[in-house]
Length: 176
Image 1 (cartoon, rainbow, N blue to C red):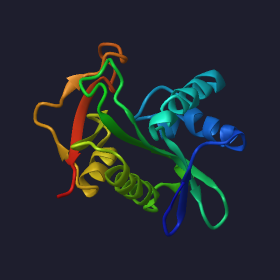
Image 2: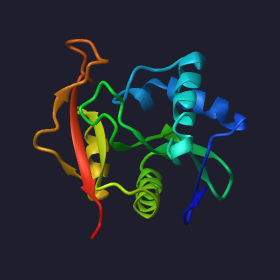
Image 3: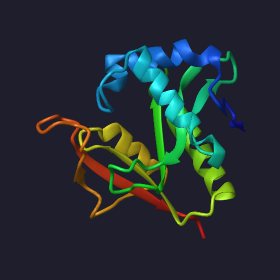
C-alpha cells in the first residue's frame, strides 16, 4: 500500500470489482485508451494484474482517502510481449471521469514512480499511449518522462485504420 496526501494505492479487493467494471465500461473514460470492457473483460484485466503481484507489480486501486471512493486504477506492470517495450517496467493509469482534472493521476503516478525507484532495480520506466491521447502525453511530461524518438509504432492489438493504433512511447530514467 502506498499513501499520498489525498490517496491510497492498494491491491484491488473484491469490493472494488463493480467500481472498476464501471470505469472500464465507460466509453468516455476509455475513448483514448482501448475499447470498453464488459464484466468478463474487466475481470481478465484484473486477473492479468494479479499475475504481476509476485514481483510487487500490478496496478493498484486508486482510493480517495477522505471518503474511500475508487478514483481509478494505476501502477506498474511488465510491458506486454506484443509491444517494443516487452518485459520493461511500464507505468499506466486510468482515472474515472468524475475525478478528471483534479490532479489524482499525477499524484498517484508520482507516488508509483517513487515506489519503483525505491523497490525495483531498473534503469528506466516506460509508458505508452495512443498518439491521439494528448492528455496522457502531457501527464507523462509532467512526471518527467520524455518521448522516445524511436518509440513510435503501430500497436498490433488495434486494427489498421483504428485511431488508437498509432502509439507513442515515453520513458523516465532512474534518478541519479
